[in-house]
Image (tube, rainbow, N blue to C red; front, side):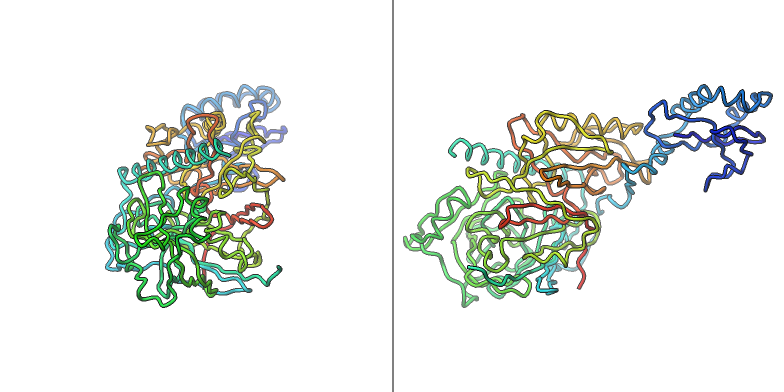
Length: 557
């Protein structure tokens, strides 16, 4: 590791004893800089440091002009130690951070690209994504954050963000409660593909993702949730509904709409899908459903069936919830798409069409780009730039609707963390949870290593559930270490650079490590959607595998 110092009017020795004149160091972009020694023995994380001209430093260096090159070379360790100490105390962290850009285990994070959008007005009241296309037998639906369209685009102030993160925490508690409750109790066809645009939901003040499908002949914009099973929309007549951008679904306008009978097998499947058995309606013939999401959000209404158009693929008699009483943190969307594994999930209902395979690429929160939800096994339409690595989905008969994987390791900046629990810890992957949760021991190890590699930056107060924060308001970009989660079969999830830090303040004066600790070691870790951005995540329920590949999310006709 070589330190470089600019000299004025002084010729000195190179690292190997060669004479290097000022302004001719032989290194690209280093005119007027020379090598003075090696810092390999110091095990510094910085590959090199470029030091600016300083009168005091030049006077110090000039005092060595009467020494020979051989004498200076023999004093190289003392010189480099002085220069290293001088750099640590005399120059801002931007210089040090810039130096780290050459390491293969670090990456550049441009801060201005990740700042939350500021408030602006638009006259558009409904501009949800409607695009879809067919390519190589795959129907492709656009995917965005749920905030993609709103009459008043959101100003992501701290109050809103804290509310979202606290709601995320409540969702996590709800999932943990469902898991604990479950643990305490214990013919070949030609397959189709569909790709649906997947969009950001930030303009509706949530960090979930949305797609647009056609139900009963009308477009419905739905949250995508792998942690839920029942797909539902708000319906007329509605006893109590939250405000949504699109008109309420009107069953009377769909000739293919039909109610599910109370005594049917479909109604009985509600118990596995929601944890609540189907309830007979007032006339004792129709099936009522109820789903609670743990954060106070809920939906209740009639279980029904209608035609569902996914891209260009028509699914007849698709079972969904026709919500008559709905409330909670759903923003302005029309409902939710359940991508879990129960018999009532969309994955199971379309198994004969898509083979139980789907994948998505979640776009970045702050960029005006779309991702995609692809239904079916057509890898040729993926846009991944790294190979897909697959791990096994863990089968848990007590919790059959969730997607679990076995975490075997975590590496930060190329450093593998050590913990005896690696290889024995299930993790739930969930598109509806925002921030990744780790067991306390895992999180403490991650936090410690991250702070060792991401050092020299001013600290900032904790924000909501995030306790490792920095003030980066004076920086245009910083160098951050790479993050990788490792799983069985040598599969790995490389977290995108946009998924490592969370902006609590738009001016970057409070930027936090986007991970949080669980309450105790017995709770199940969760891989949230913030850490899944710009990754092609492939769910194969038939082969019981989960795949990861790096991809810059985009949707183009």
